[in-house]
Length: 209
Image (cartoon, rainbow, N blue to C red):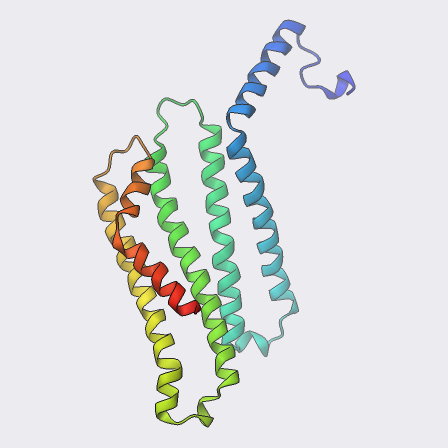
């Protein structure tokens, strides 16, 4: 590298070596966060490009269809967690070594936001599959009993998942207020002991099956 391209080239050698060693130590210490930031940035670029392609290739007629709205919601809800997660990582990364850094309090709103947007992105995808099921089994060709047996359980499961995630978020917010604020691991332990996430995942497995 040319010395003119090196920002440390104009400094005395002993100071430049000290700064370079400090930067190398900082990068090595936060290499895990850097990797996650790169992955989150790649996913953000892919999902945002997909979102723009979806809008660009749509027509005024297709934008009025429920399946298009669900596609936009699924991609949009899937993009927002990447933005929030990337913002959290950068925020923690640039404040590394700060004695006043309270990781647990910083993480709390992101955990709730990620849970909300990730869940409803999955719910939008499931709803798209439900619309495809309607195309395979048109309600007009089914009797009332067959219609209820075909779509009733699916709708009931989806409503159960919505109720479970809402209850989970509310109970988690209540527990988070009483947790020690110095260790973010307590957030994981609290939600691990809650029955609501297990109910959400169980309903997810049944719904996918």
